[in-house]
Amino acid sequence: MQFSKVVGHQKVKDLLAKEAQNDRISHAQMFLGPEGSGKLPLAIAFSQFLLCDNPTKKDACGKCPSCTKVEHNVHPDLHFVYPIVKSKGIVTSDDRRQEWNLFLEKNPYFNLNMWQDSTDEMGKNAQIGVDESKQILKKLSLKSYSGKYKIMILWLPEKMNGSAANKLLKILEEPPEKTLFFLVCDSIESILPTIISRTQIIKIPQLTNDDIVPFIKKIYGTTDKNALSISNLADGNIVEAINMVQGDQAHHIYFDIFVKLMRAAYAIDALKLMDVAEELASLGRENQKNFLKYGLHIFRESLLSNYTGNQLTNLRAEEQAFLEKFARFINNQNITALTQEFNDSFYHIERNANPKILFTDLVIKLTKMIKKGV
Image (cartoon, rainbow, N blue to C red):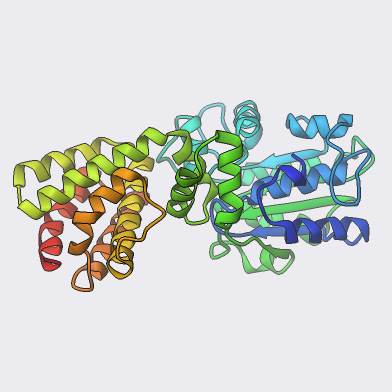
C-alpha cells in the first residue's frame, strides 16, 4: 500500500517520509490512535516506502518487485504479528498467515472483531502469546532478503500476555541491525511501561469528514448526502463507515427498528416492546453495536433539530420526515438519560453481555425516558 492510497493523515505521511530521507528512523515506533483511524495501513505504507526499490521523496513507486510483494503480503522482509485464538494446530500468527493475507488484501481497514469473525472465532480470547515472541526472535535473527530493513508489524500489541511482552522487551533493548518494529495499537494502558519507553510514539488522530466522505464517494459511488450521513454516524472511524456503506441496507434496518422501538415505548405497548427486544437480540453483535450508535446519532440530530428549526442536512429523507414529529420528545428532560443508557448498552455488548437480557432491560427503561420528554 502506498501513502497515496491511505486515507487522510498527510502530516503523518510527511513526517514518516522525512524520517526516511534523513535516515533517522527509530528502530521501534508505536502508531497510536483510536480504532478506525487507519493506523495499520499507515504502518504498511511506511514499510513499503522503506522497502521500495525506486522510491520518490514522498512515496513508494508502487511498481517495483518489492512494492508488488508488499501489496500481496508476501515480502520476505515484512513480517506480521496479530492476535490469534490458540487451538489445535494454531499456535502463532504464522498458522493463520494465509487467512491474514487474504483478509488484509481484501480490505486493510478492519478491527479485531472483524478479524475474529473471518476466522469464526468471534467472542473468544485472542492473544499474542509467548510462542509468538519466540517466532519473532527466530525471524529477526535471519539476514535481510533484500539487503534493506527487516520490518515487524505488531498489530494490537496490547493483546500480548505478560510472558510475550517480557520476551519482546529484550529484543527492543538490543535489536538486530536494520531491524524495525512498528507497534500498531488502539491504547497503551495494558502495554508494559518499559516497552512504551523504548518506542517513538506517533499519534494518529481520528479521521475527519473531509477525509472519509471523498473516500466513500470514490470507492463506493454513494451520494454526497449519504456519504456525509454515514461519515457523521461513523464519527471518524473509517472501519465503521466502510461497514455502513457496504451494508447500506442495514442503515434502513436500523431506522425501521428504531421507529418501532420509539413508537412502542411512547405507547407503552409491552408486547411490541418485547418483539423489538427479541429482534435486536437476534442481530449479530456488530449490528447491535451499530444500532446503538445509530440511536445516539438520531438523539443528537433530534436535539439539534429542536434548536435549528429542522434545518438538518445529515439525514435521509425518511429520517427527516420521522424527526419532524419525533424530535420534540428529545430534550433536556431526557437526553442525558437516553445517551447514558445507549452508551452503557454499547459498553456491555462489547463485553459479551447477554443481548436478550440487555435489550429487554433497555426497552423497558425507554418507556419512562420517552415520557419524560413529553
